[in-house]
Each structure stands twice: as structure tokens, then as C-alpha cells.
Amino acid sequence: MPDVFAQVLARPDLHWILAACLIGGIVRGFSGFGTALIVLPVAARLMDPVAAIVMVVVMDAFGPLPLMAQAVRDSRLADIRRLFMGMIVTLPVGLSLLLIMQADIFRYAVSVIALLLLFCLICGFRYRGELRSSFLYGVGALSGFTGGFAGVPGPPVILIYMASTASVRVVRANATIFLYCFDLLILFSFWLSGRLDGAAVALGIAAAFPVVLGNLVGNAIFSRGHERVYRAVAYVLIATAAISGLPLWDV
Figure 1 (cartoon, rainbow, N blue to C red):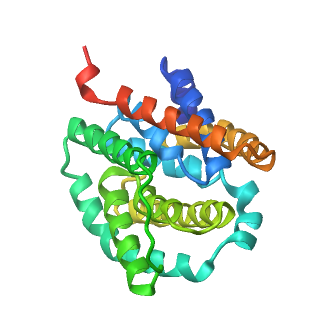
Figure 2: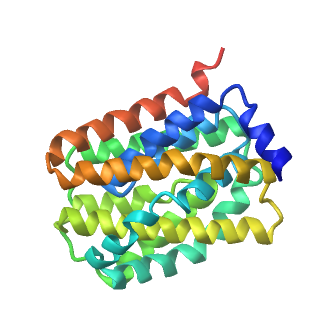
């Protein structure tokens, strides 16, 4: 294991990865989402899709921990249970696609999903209906699919909650807990299938430090208010990461 960490520290692109993780952690700490949307487009340019997702979910297993107690108090746990039940049905389907997907297609998928989410939010999409149980199961199922094949389970859940009439605290708390449950489930899935690459796990552990720091900074920002300003900044950062991660920029 020390040899694996030595390889991680010797990576010439490590500073780019850690910088993206710090920014992703700040956005996650403020909004309850955004880590994968910022980090994956960067990571997917530097490693294969499975390794990139392993790194992100390992680091995210640590990042939100300081915020979890408050998230549980602010959340709607019944909604999270329904989302989770929907997710576990479709996650294996998404993972099956991931394992046969070409790296460039993966990068396009991550960036396009992130940009579609931002487009819907910026355009003011609103879901006026009631968040019924059957509806939440369906959203969870869609989230499991996008999380499996692109490593981004958040957009379906985030879009529905942020477009609904739920309070900012509920949106933030539900997203934080749901995404953490996804991270644990996909880690377990990769472990069962023997795809927990040691180098990717070590990189995820190293990246956990800036992510935890970023979560704490983002949480402090959230506590100070100015929601509109910081949400706009988060949108810009996600859009920048998504656009820069597109393969069409490769030389």
C-alpha cells in the first residue's frame, strides 16, 4: 500500500486533481451537491472511467461526514428511502453500460448530463406537483442509471428538489444524504466485482483531505447566507468543468 501512495504522490497531474476536489468540496458543502459534476470531467481526462468514479466515490465517502448530523436533522428521511429503493434497481444496469463504454463517450455523458441539469435550473424549470412515493421511486431509478453509467447520480434528484417548493435546507440535506448512500453502494458494487483498483482508492483517500476542507468551507459559506450569489458561482464552476471536460478540446 505505501508503494501505491508513492505512485499517487508522483503523479504529475496530482495538483489539478486536488484543486478540482477542493472546489468540488466547497460547492458540495454549500449546495449539497456538485462534487462529481466538477471533479469527474477533470478526472476523466486523466484516467479511465472506472478509476475516475472509484476515486470520486472514495473521496466522497469522507467529504460530507462533518455535515452528516445536521443533514439528518434537516432531511426528509422517508423521501430518501424511496429514492434509494429506486436507485438500487437500476444501478446494476448503469454499471453494466459503464464497463463497456469507451472513455470519450463517458466524458461526453458526464459533461452533457451536467450541462442539461444547469440548463434546466437556470431556465427556471419548476415541478409544481406533489412528490408522491411512486414519483420518488422513479426519480431514484433514473438517478441509479445515470450514476451507474456516468458516475453522476445527483442531477435527477437535484433537479426535482431544487425545482420544487422544498426549502433550501431540505434540498441540501436530502441531496447530501442520498449522494452519500450512492457512494457507499457503488463502492460495495465495485468491491464485489473486483474493480476497486488500489491506485484509484489511494488517490481517492489523498483527495479526501481537500474535499473535507472544501465541505467545511462551503458549509460556512452556506451559514452566512447570500444564497443567490453562491449558487450562481456554483453554476459557473460546474459549467466550466463540464465544458472543459469535453473530448473535443483534446489536442
